[in-house]
Image (cartoon, one colour):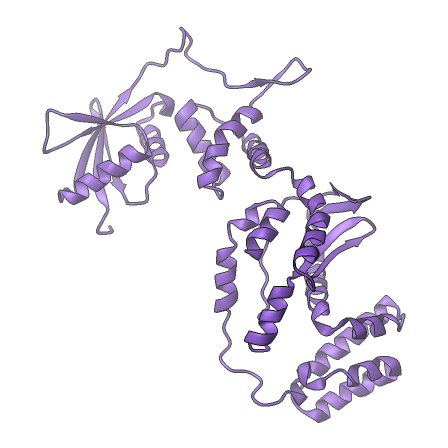
Length: 375
């Protein structure tokens, strides 16, 4: 047991249970556990704290703050054991043993709970944006006596986020406006919104200020890492507006899509002139993939002899591609020609820190997420 943990005995009539209270325990977790172990309705349960120093006084523990102050007080006075009394209240709301929380559906003869859930979740999401549905289930069971299905909580959270951060579709629509504004206010920035037959695929952004800062103040070394976003949609763009087109890619497609993403991500760093030259070759997709594999293998070879072997294969496949490749600053992409020591102390600390900084932003709509990362 940790040094700050306290032992708590909760009694109900002739029944009693022991609990361990740690510093990070939440009120709804405590109440849920007590109700379950004493086999009483959680919505009807109240907890009363009995102080050893003041036996004639009792204190009601009704919320997160009450629990926190109670634990802090006992630690300050050096008490390691706490006694609480469980009280089961009679549920009686206007003569009924139950309550209904719902909203009428517009133009229909029905009611729904999503709107009510969304309204209650909004203030919670402001301070706990990463709250899990199971925690929401416990909260609603504690506060309202509602046992909610996962799907209702999920949709309620979607509505709450939409009210707070705007519609997901609209956020994607605003990317074109954002592209225009960035280029107006930061000339020289590179932004590419990639699409395929109207389907949104990728977004690449490099601000001009970052480009200038990197070239003038940083070592010419790129750290590459990936992180997953939390948007549930893949979106398409048609006539300037994005629309949902279905779930994420199937499992078998994941590796191919990630590989293509990396290639598309690195393309803007290689110069527009050489990209246009490679495009002008008009090679078949299958041949382009073979050529890409040969180039990748050549760049990893440490000796000129090994590098020459792969370049010979490239020449036999396409003399034009060979000429473009051989004239493109070999020391920048081929190990065999890299000047000085190729590698020093390499860790992922920088990228892991970055992923930690943007953890909350990944839950936001795409435009808010982009601006968060930008700042």
